[in-house]
Amino acid sequence: LTMELIHDGESWLGLAFSETGGMVGSEAVIGLPEENAVQKYNLGGKYGDAVQPMLDDNQTLSDASIQIVDGQTIMKFTKLLQEDGEIEILSGKNIMLFAHGGYLGLGYHGPQARMAFELTL
Image 1 (cartoon, rainbow, N blue to C red):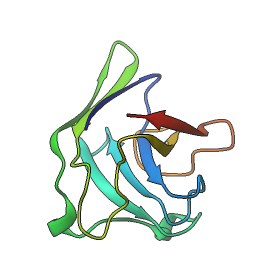
Image 2: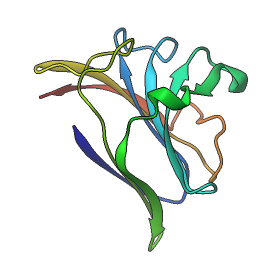
Image 3: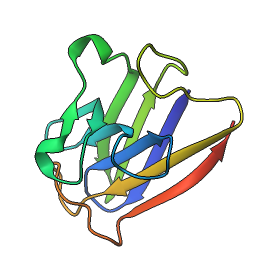
Image 4: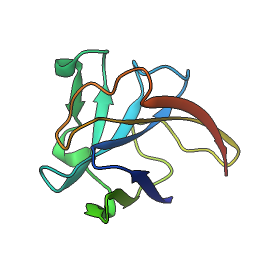
């Protein structure tokens, strides 16, 4: 699955795959412009220390990038649809979460900077 997210503004971006539509227990791809890094994360809770990068063996994204161009943050990545021990991306309905922060490093997104949605593949 290849994704491109474009946000009007300069901030970190996150796109999560969820089984319930809630943050806790979901798995995210988070891009941090401050570190020029795009990685997979486990969302273990709604506080900073609970949002942790997955182990190196699980960092299987390809063609991953994040950049700021003309005031927009652009994150791109390719992710496998099925990976051991991770939420499967289905041919059909998938529950997704999107969030962004007001700064370039990872932090709280605020209530107006998040959303859940369904994506059918």
